[in-house]
Length: 238
Image (cartoon, rainbow, N blue to C red):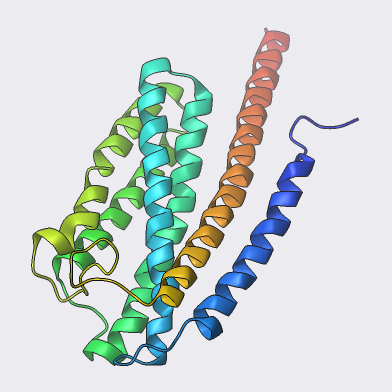
């Protein structure tokens, strides 16, 4: 008998496509894209650094929409979407925070500096880690999930701040190289490598998000089963 929570066939197909996309991303980032003249080989981490940031933005935007939907409808599925998106988004945000200093050390000579882009990114990561902690505390109390959803909406305020920080303030972080003005732009092969990596990360996000969402559904079913057993035990003990 096929379980309701058995993964559908299309998910395994998506996993295969994602694996191929990740391999293509590696090939483009490490071999097909040209070496940057000033920074050299270390610049190649740019493709993963930017792609992980963009993917985190997508995840947090989905969390934002799901939190609004949950506050409006109180339907558990939207809470499950919200927490799943935030959790996977934090993973990509962590990749972004790790790859940034790896690039910065040989280029700037320091691992970290408290400029607008780096600081706002760290604040964003901390906000969503806080959301996950708050959501964890409210896991057994559906009425308390409202507070987690409200906090998720508040946390999203920092996402556009992160994106606009290098446009609004003077920072040590490099300026935008895509749609950043007349002086911006990258080699077409670099542009292709960046978008191949982003597509691969986006597919990976969908795979991980769906996996995490189904896990949340299984947790909800288990919690409901425990509640039924507890009520049954109380009825028999009376």
